[in-house]
Length: 387
Image 1 (cartoon, rainbow, N blue to C red):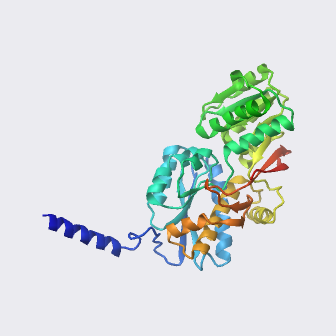
Image 2: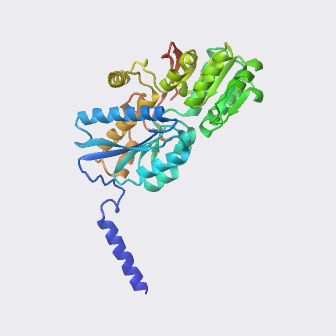
Image 3: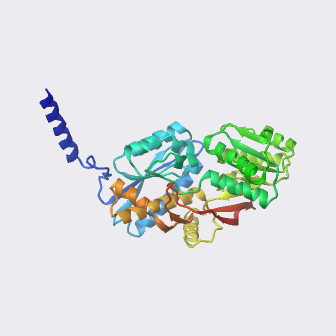
């Protein structure tokens, strides 16, 4: 009996080795002339506008790369997985790509909570993944396959707090934030930054959390107005930001307002209208930033779509080019292990969001931008180099 079992195991091992892609972690594209990259973005549901921006940025990179001869002589094709507007749909979309044997790498969602929900699956399948979210917990998870081509939330929150106090003179800010993990963390960072650096305790009464699905922000803004706070600092996603901006104006408040990078979005500006004006926000990218690569990206995108670029397009655009750089360095478009190793050797790659250099926390950037929205334009106020 033991001999039969042993013989069966040997036969199975030989069969697995005979099947392309089973003996080692390689993509099986089917068409040897094509490189397949997956992208997770919302094509339907309430986040559709955001998803379309993400896809547009990645597609622009793919079109440019293909026009220049592709990657190692192979054309690039995006495989789109619709994450709709909820975590389960996003998990399903990522799993669909992980199970697609053609995929050499994945450009992930920009919703951090959805990324955190799929890290274990990414580790299991061993597919290089660009996490377009900015939550520090993504890096803290320690995945050898996940990379963040954006700045971290906590860092942005610290820069926001420093700018509020040292430039705008804000000593008693109200902190308004969504009660999802990637917003609670930065809100706590701002509170701690004020305490540690300026010996200012921000009262609990003006640390105001809200459920992500909230649609009526008039009561929260009324609390801010009644509190005597000398500024509003908001940490949240795009849809709540639009509503908060309008509620702020409706309440007749006239205090500085600051926010995370979500505010620097055409989705917010287009839908909030004049209510978006005046906000200061940290920013990974603005079309006013004067880098050569960034301005070429801005010009190319605007020629096609007739609109300015923003972070959503920039991060997916850079992600595709990072995969290109890694594949060319590794000399392969299919060996996921070799591509993953090459992603950890990137140093000095010039992208839209800045100069990319791999760090042990699996992030790449070293500079953040402070911007202000004026007359519907995201204007650069300051550049902050932090490492």
